[in-house]
Length: 305
Image (cartoon, rainbow, N blue to C red; front, side):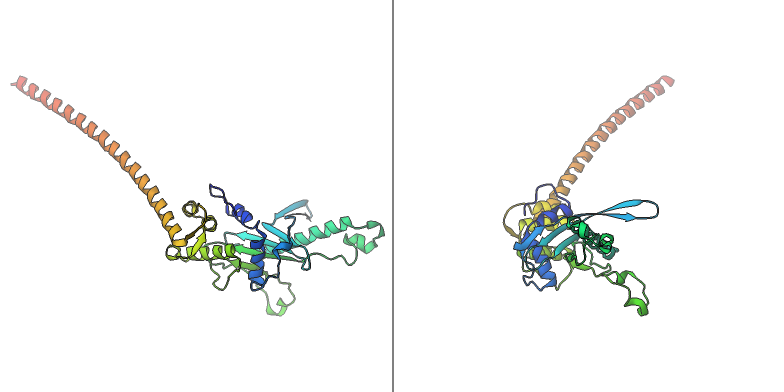
């Protein structure tokens, strides 16, 4: 992963990070399959991430445009669409948002398959459906990669967002939300090196232990951790190649912060010194005027005698 100078946004940095199919697959293998290689990185392909669906209302037709952050589809024995939604802040309606994204994905695929089919042989029911009988859609698995400082305390399913009577709960369809809390889930680990290092770095940063952590981390991973945690000085301190101890990168960051404030204080001191010198000149000028006034008063007093 190559992160350019000038701190990128978290979205841009994670898009770059997940261009590596090894890392992308590791998110799902680590979270769902205990790091077993169920999702094969070699079988991942780019998938369309823009879904447009017409939502009809009594007043007008609105266009709902949703863009998934990172999407792949598998080719081979296990055919599935995989989506990663990155979140830096807790989203309290995320289960509904995820449900909408997935539904738009299925709707887009239905439309695409219907357009590719031979409509001449369709029955009345198939014309109404927009696809032929027996048409299958590709399963979609979406995870939320949460990288925020606070522990995720948002809902993890649509049911969590409802005050629902237990007698009818079983009849109300639920929709789960799979949240990967990168900075706080102590039971989480990844077999992929860069992904596990990112998890470890964010965990240490949010637990305020990074300045004592002697684990070696790739510089670009520490830079990414700086981006995701909103720490511009950490991002700058982590620039470089190779690996460094986490605590050493934090030392460099703190030195940068110290030098920044030192420079600011020196500028303020210089400005204060200039102001003091200007005030001293004014005081000297006032003293001279006072002396001149005193001399005039003395002469007036002599003339009065």
